[in-house]
Length: 482
Image 1: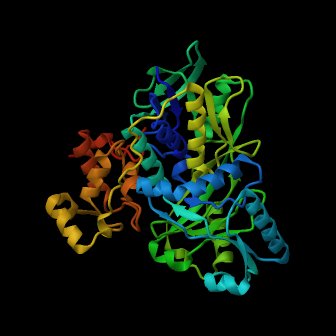
Image 2 (image 1 turned 45 degrees about the vertical axis):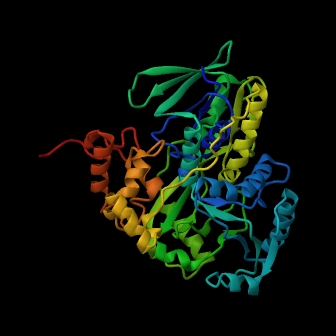
Image 3 (image 1 turned 90 degrees about the horizontal axis):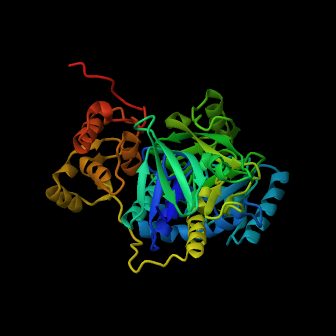
């Protein structure tokens, strides 16, 4: 019997786990993927939105602004890259300029500070590569960039160090109310056909695209999630200097439209599209979608060299039919707490949602704060960021740091070993990619993949044939040929 079972190890589930691990209670996190951050949290824009876009009075507005204010200090404590670069919403007509006034007023009502409308001259001085057709922009200086992978991983690691237990490749198939709480039945993705059950006094539903399915297992008040697919293009770091701020167009019915932004790692990210689909596992890119991304981008930044695209990908957003976040205890299921419909600006809102749900659960159950709660965590230091003297010293102490594995991103074996052996360490190629960026450079793993497979085999003590790209059936090798 656990005091709390959290379902889903994305940024929301990890945030709840981290905050709740500061209380005297037993916590289990169940994740159907092979790692944290394998669903919606792994494929988004990495933006900390200022909060001007959400409807005043909505939970999106409330948690977006609160989370944005919390994010910088949280990233400092957890040693996660954070950069406040500001955002611009571009207007290309007189009518769109009027929309900027509405967004500014709306943002101020939501509590966003320092919003200002820039005229054409100011705008082009700030972003000289912008289209000369832009007439004005709403400038939000509090908008920022964060790494969604490292944030989620850091939250989960910190929770784990503070006592939260994580189980992976466990897909929840049934939830049943019992006299003392809830019985959660899971199927094991590593052992098909095997089922296990866990008992929890409280359930916290952070299952993203499947949060409606889990809620509807125990409540008569049903929810409905529709996946919204967004396709992206990622450019080589040599294109990262084209813009400094995050660039939006005036939003339409399907959201904020195709944006242009740097990442905290120096790449340039273009996207996303917004397509309503049915399949919650459909993350394939399309010729039409990527064409739209590139065409819309050229309208914003005409001289951008889109020939520098090194990869494309798609992510899914969990849109609930009522259009707002749903955060709180289910009315007809005491002890069952929801985080449903957490789409954009979910990443920005994650710290606030984590705090809110933790406060609700702790108050209901009279959980007491721990006397010793480790609130800080140290990340993996990028070898490439060190000075010559620091590099020499670390190689002398740990020779594996002198073995360069990923040439594109300058990642050493020492960093890879740390990624594998940390709390909740990497078990797959994508697990390494999210932690230290192996395979994220120009060659997209063409050079380093064989070496990464060898290191994973050696350090995990398993056969090469068991190494996967991202868990489950995503094996890389089928048999030995010599």
